[in-house]
Image (cartoon, rainbow, N blue to C red):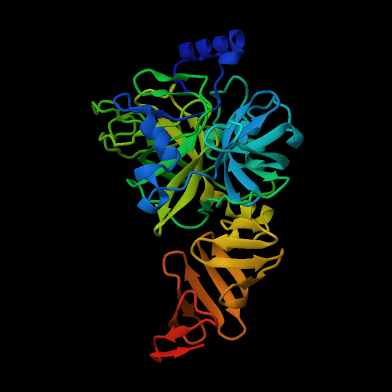
Length: 432
């Protein structure tokens, strides 16, 4: 977590605190909630329990896990493919003087309590920190002379696991479509817990909590202090939320408030949500889930906050859509299949597309549609080629409707039919 001060006196105090009490430095974030609500409500949300089930319209948090190393570092990551995890770069390397992370020192743990005997632990194969973070690493203590990687919106990393995760559906990653200001975002993480009145002060917590907030800031084009040679045209991206109070007196991203970092001008409603919360120490790298085209998608990873998670805290996320080229270059799986659940023996299940067989190729065997060549435009839509039907397009919200490019007409697939039966709307007829 980084608190940026404007006057010299506060900067001197910050430097002294870092020198005398280095163990107090908090670069991580976790969940804090309203002080007038029970914490069990936020726990049930993270567990997708009872009324907070996925079928009731909430994001699926089972893909959210804890990233830990042998030195006790804790961050949060989210499964975005069967063996890939997205997180914040500073979880793995938080300053210029920090050593490069060693993959064998790290593990990714899935489960409601990452220290429970029921939790599933996965060893890390390799770590990929974005070059823009490396080029703009924070100093220790933070410098006020120039903006560093967290404020610039380049705090992002990928972790590859040694073995694929089976039985858990990866989260959908947004790399293309625009987010909507004023709409809700959800987030979930491990570690210190607490509330907006006292801050996140329970350091013994190891359980995953979740909360929500309103997306108050969206900055898509941040000029970098140091441009990485590999990506000369890259720009940083930022998303931000503020922690409103039940008294509606902590609207730190309101139009009358002083600007925070590079978030720019804007406005924010002081109204508090029923599950309002913010990130707190240890949530670093947790995903912001935002509904795009009817699908809960990861739009950012948590980078820093402005307070100790009390009311008024501004939590800032690095925007994932700015890093499409880098992510697609590292994860060779067709993007439309990244969010598929690994069933083993090269069989996968995608909630909206169904069952298919894939073996490191863009050609997959779909249980009903047969052999199709996949080309993903993003994690929730596909172009596919069928020898019988040519090029088809569909996505998670319109399937089993398929747009046939050659005839410029819509087809409707009768799900479960074998052989597949298709209704052609232009011809008003069925075919097999």
